[in-house]
Amino acid sequence: MARLGRPLFTESMEAWTYGPVVPTVYAEYAQYGRTLIKAPAEDANQLTEDERSFVAAIWSDYKRFSAQKLVSMTHGEPPWKKARKGLAHDAPSRNIVHRSDMTAHFLKQVPADLECGADIVDERVLPHPDAVQSKRSARRRKTG
Image (cartoon, rainbow, N blue to C red):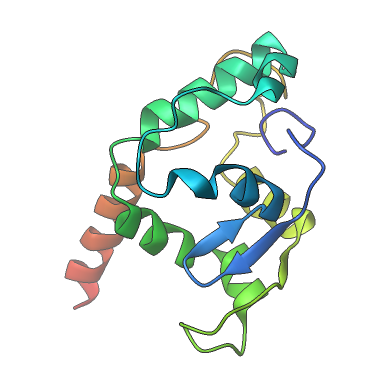
């Protein structure tokens, strides 16, 4: 939303125990469990070239992370925290992670002079997760 100026899908995300989930996507792919998904969804062909490039860039940056690392990363983000506010960490939830909260959060990561729909995502738009973690660690060391 923040990068392309529009959502890639219409369904809502829910704040499930281990991360944000689109229930219809979960239902489609749950049968695979932890195994490789052999064929992409037919809907993938409905994406524009900009959208496919964006998804490919996100996949390139995040595919190396374990499930537990991704859980940790999403649980530290404000939209997740807001949707889960008041719940125990292991409590089931169907609370919505609101688009407005996600947009506000991710807009902070997009430079003001970058137009939506411009070139493929780069490190100016979505900093590499390790870089974000390194900055946080450095701040902790300085204050700790």
